Image (cartoon, rainbow, N blue to C red; front, side):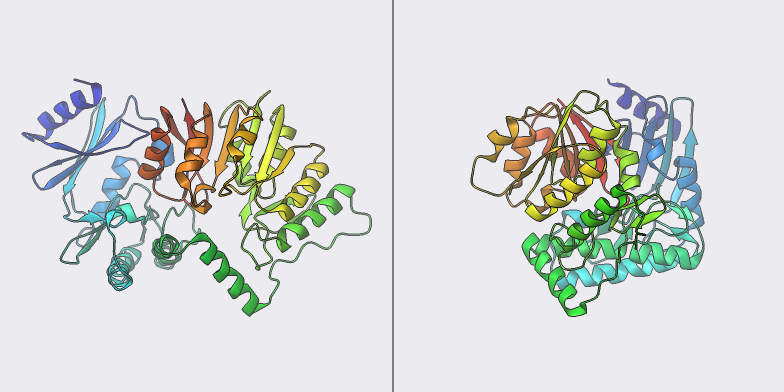
Length: 424
C-alpha cells in the first residue's frame, strides 16, 4: 500500500467511512486526491509531502470556511466536516451529480442555457461577497436534466459584491488575487474550439478594421532620449504593426517600462520574466524559443541568465525585425529563424540541429494545426518549458505521452494558465 492509500485508510477510520473510490488525483501533485463514498466527496491532502499549497488562495480550512459561508446557495457544495491531523487534512462535502463541462460536446443553445444557470450561481456568490476565481469548464458540473453546479473553491476569496461580480463575470483582476477563469473565459474557450485559429485572426482583423482606432500610443521620447529607448520605440512600432499578436489592433504582445517610459502591450513582460527566470538554471545552456513573438525571453535569458545561445523562432518575419532591435537595445544577439510549424518541410531536423538544452513552447500549441507533430518534436528533448491553452489534465497527458516523466507546475500566468516544467 502506497503512502496516499495508507493515509486514505486512516482518513476512512477517522470519518467512519466503510469504503470509497478514488475519483481524481492531481497529475502533478499526487498527494492531493479526491475520493467518493456513497453520496459524499472527500478532498484529502498529504500535509508532509504536498508542495502545491502556495498555488492556491485557500488551504482546506479556508476553503471549508468559505463553503460554510455559501451554505444554502443552489449549485454550491454543502460541506459536512473538516479534519486536520499531523499527517493529512480532509474536507467532506455532499456530492453533486453530473459531468464536467469540459467532457461534454454541446451546441450553442445548450451552452447559453448552461452559462445562464452558472451566471445565477455566480450572482448569488457575489451577493455573499465570494469570488470563485477558478471558473473553468472542469469545475462546472452539468447533469443530463440540465442542472448546473460549481465546485472546487480553493482559489476563492472574500471581497465586496461589485468586485466579486466583475471578477467572476468578466475575469478582470481587481481587488487582489488572480482570476484563473470566469464566465466570459468559458465562452471564449468554447468559441476558440469551434473556430480555427485563422478564423479567429480574421475576426480580430475585421473588428480592428471597423474601429480604425489606435488605442495604444507609444511614449513620446525627448530629443535627448537614449539610443536604447529610441531603438525600443522603433521595435514596439514594428510589433504593433505586425500580425504576430492581435492582428489589426495595433497592440504589441508585451508591455515594458524602462527609464520611466511605458511601452504598451497586451501582457506585462516583467511579470512574465519574474516567473520564468527562476524555473531552472539557464547558465551555459542553449535555448530554443518556439513562437518567440517579440523575443524578450531569448533576449533576457542571454542578458540576465547567462544562457550560452538562443534561437528565437516565429512564423512572422516582420516580428523578427522587432526582435533584432530589442536584442540590440539590450546588447545581446540571439539567432533568429522564420518558421511555419505547419509547413510540410522538415523543419524538425533544422531546429534539432541547433542542439538545444531547453525548449520553450509558451502559448504555441493552440495555434498549430498538427498538434501531434509539434508534441512529437518536443519529445526529442530532455527539458521543455510549456504553457498551453487546455486544462492541466489534457496538457499533462499530451506531454507524458511523448515521454516526459516529470511534469511540474512552476507558475500560473496572469491568464490563469499553468506553466509546466517537463523533464525526461
